[in-house]
Length: 324
Image (cartoon, rainbow, N blue to C red):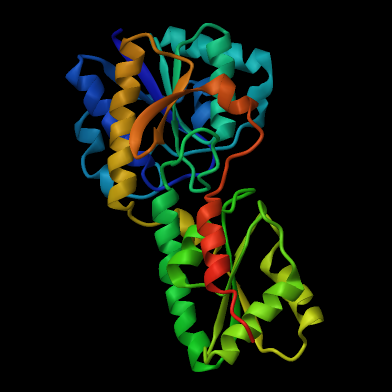
């Protein structure tokens, strides 16, 4: 194998650059040229390629986002478009592909694999919502960004004895909400996986105040509803409490990656190249029990949902369940 390609697709995630850099460095170690594909599957179809040197990747490990850029490209579902991408790669001498992204990226990569083109995936999404793996690149940074913002909001909430609802990202998964909620001592965590009872949330907020707390914090996963809708429902249940809301939105995707995101991205990038060399394809890199592991893309995409850390959610439920 002499030449492979790497792309990033879907929503950007801190640590993607670290993964790209590892693919390039490991490729150089094995004498393989790595081609960067700009703008994901769109660039693959359009032949938007550039050869990446080790120098091109210098210092990229500390940057958020993706220097290969990203784009959503629903047209890639069409077989004609997929075959065009394969033709572009063949013309450029690309023998295999490393695809970095979420489940949509893996779905696109799987189509190439079905057409006989070797593919390996790396999970890059702040949502941490890919079945099988316990961890995806970007999740740790996004959670720490949310943590820092919630801490700041807590300062002003305390100054005014207010209740705040903070909406965090995660798509249909509650992982960011759970981890950020436990880490900030939230009075309530609201996630898609568990549903919620507004009356019970109001009770927990009042119970915290009865025990002397000067403010309250509710962490809301975006997959449940948006913060405006939540506040409207809260006020219907408790019209006398001063409650405000903040949606953290895309700030969670930015920033320099944490050490955890950089290290796991590096491990996954290097292992992806090794897997291609060993003809281990149609798989993606992941984490199980804090160790690097590989997972079958087809089996993963057939699973309906990713399991949130229910034990952490229940711990927070226990900690905030106080008698009035």
